[in-house]
Amino acid sequence: MAGQAGLEEVVAAQTKLSDIDGKLGRLSYVGYDIHDLATHSTFEEVVFLLHHLRLPRADELEALSEELAEERTLSEFLADLMPTLAQQTSPMSMLRTTISAASAYDPDGWDQSPEANLRKAMRLVAKTPTLIATYHRHRTDQDPVQPNPKLPHAANFLAMLLGEEPDQDTARALDITLVLYADHTLNASTFTARVIASTLSDMHSAITGAIAALKGPLHGGANEEAMKMLEEIGTVDRAEEYVKDRLARKQKIMGFGHRVYKTEDPRATHLRRLSRELGERHGDMRWYEISERVEKVVMEEKGLYPNVDFYAASVYHSMGIPTDLMTPIFALARMAGWTAHVREQYADNRLIRPESEYIGPLDQQYVPIEERAESESEAAS
Ligand code: COA
Image 1 (spheres, protein in one colour):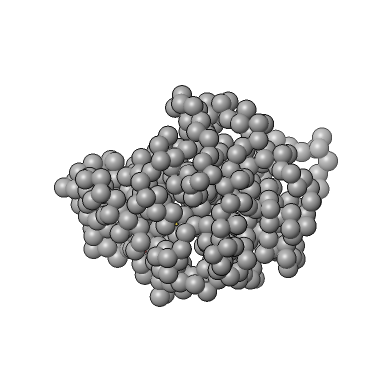
Image 2 (cartoon, rainbow, N blue to C red; image 1 turned 120 degrees about the vertical axis):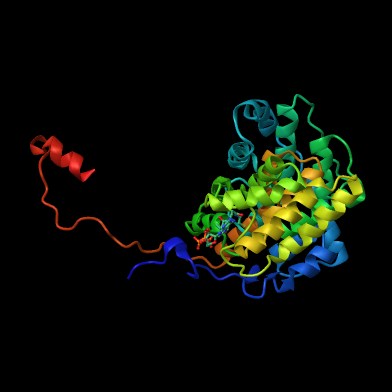
């Protein structure tokens, strides 16, 4: 029987980590509504939730936060790689390469025990912000900023990236976006990670594969494209014409539509609010106002809702985050979900090995190489 193109609606794994109701526009992690988590939880708390399948007590959250802060520093090997990578590679290629390279220096080595894999997961979550920030400092000819163990995950990332401690509201805004991006059922990169884990390959290999999948423009990258679009539009009065013109040329509006959500993506609700609040705080409503106008026109013209990536673009831009780091920040947050999915796969593993449907020629006559005519080979290729 023919398979479903793109595996749409095919259930390929069971998970206790996250769940989407596309009709009602609901997302939950371990049964907790994303609205509650985005309102009350920090990213660190969500890391605990995804890895322990329950919310932490205060002392447990403190211990996890300390563990993450201790693991932020890069090994000498990774720090030495960075100047070359900053000159030679794009941010996502750097991340794919360094996460792979990090396996060589992980203190747990090839230990595949559940305890070692949890420690590896926490190290990956802890080090990803340092990798992105160090890369950016090098490529802009600035000295890397050492992690500050006194700062939480989100605030420390901004401090390492921009060279100054962010105000509390900006740090919390980033923290909320990390909560929103932390997991999202069996998206392409998470599925990739689970397929690799199902061969009993190691944690770093599975995460390297996930990053490679996220790198593609059909998965990650929409927040960057949305920002480029807002910049092209430039002013609110140009938004309507721009959108209509694009739609008339059958081009997609980046940051709109979703395979699963048939109503508003619940993450977009928070990001729209954050975009407005950050704009107000910085006295620059331009990006929010253009976004709002684009949203209105896309709804009128196509009946499409914004997804997570649309308002994330103006949120990150307002924080001073360069556009090409928006997908790496998606990875920074999703590291929580990827690593939890890999551990979930190991805990109850069966090799993921689907079938394919053969659609090539049948019963071909084998011809020895010296008798193969040029025209026949060309016709076949
Ligand atoms: N802009 C304009 N039209 C869009 C659109 C968009 N962003 N997203 C979907 N559509 C239209 C399609 O053109 C198609 O219209 P048609 O029936 O007239 O041909 C219809 O909606 C269905 O789209 P399709 O691409 O088949 O839906 P999908 O479920 O396969 O794709 C996405 C979902 C997310 C890939 C798609 O909406 C998209 O490409 N969005 C932009 C990229 C993006 O924001 N990605 C991040 C997702 S979190």
